[in-house]
Image (cartoon, rainbow, N blue to C red):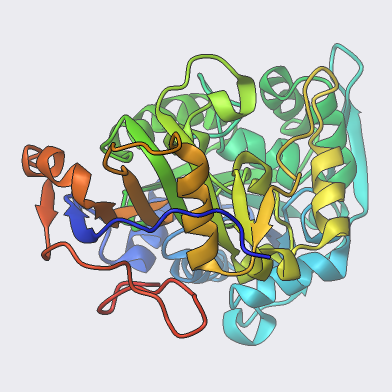
Length: 425
């Protein structure tokens, strides 16, 4: 059956300028920070657990290698432990497989990786919420928390993704994440670490702020009693480095890939609009969103596709119901809706999904020129395709550089959207 569709407009590639200030020598930077902090002075001969999470931190391998080397330099015996809440279908082997897809293996890092969903109960908060901590880490002599400091789809002010959340959700495993989310994450992300830190073996945190090109802009080694202050301060820095799509109104936004390695909600609401989760004014006003594909690192967890209006059969073939449902139910807000995992209209291929989406976004017989943008993900906003109707606005934007003349959107012979040049990663 042929669905009604509208032909795609001609597009041009546009490069959005993004400052590229970043740390060049990650290893030396981190090792020196640890030496300056003196936080590893008591780990001689001790087993030291280091968090291995599932967010796509720029330079993640180099960061892990550097922290491992810092522990070894201090005489400790480092190992990695899984710290990703309920991801990977909420089981240890699923989380080990996620790490493998990131290239985080015992062979690559040269240290043991202990994956378990078991936890130690460290206590309860003043409102009765259980505080859980990864058992492999708790059985060690010391633990180091590594986090990416970034915005979050739920935590929008004060503290978002960072050291405190890594303790609360990542180190809490599935059970700890369920307690925190269901009792209000905005409150528990402050309360739970205040119980966990004095009752655990955490000796240090490594807080990473990325620039908009996914390179480490700032890396700090933080003592546990300064985690909250560091999260608040570094979130402001991260927000100042963020970039968004430079148009307020679109008929269609095409997102090549969504996934848990990009953001917890698959697509960042700071880019696509919080109204898709919380309601309210349509700012920005992107009428339709098309999510074309799911990242391999998500291991089938398609949370976030419910924020789109259209997807593809390719996406559906990768969608793991169990992985998605477990993560969605663990992260539930009892007073909210469970929309992020719902599958939208799924079309045969990328071209059909885009054309049907464009048809649905415009009145019958409309003479308006289609306003369409295509991006690689909500975290890769430096390069994009924009429709011809948007070129006058782009020409007025000093941060935008138009790379070519308007032409047809590129597809392969099977209807998959492709990127011209070496720009599709």
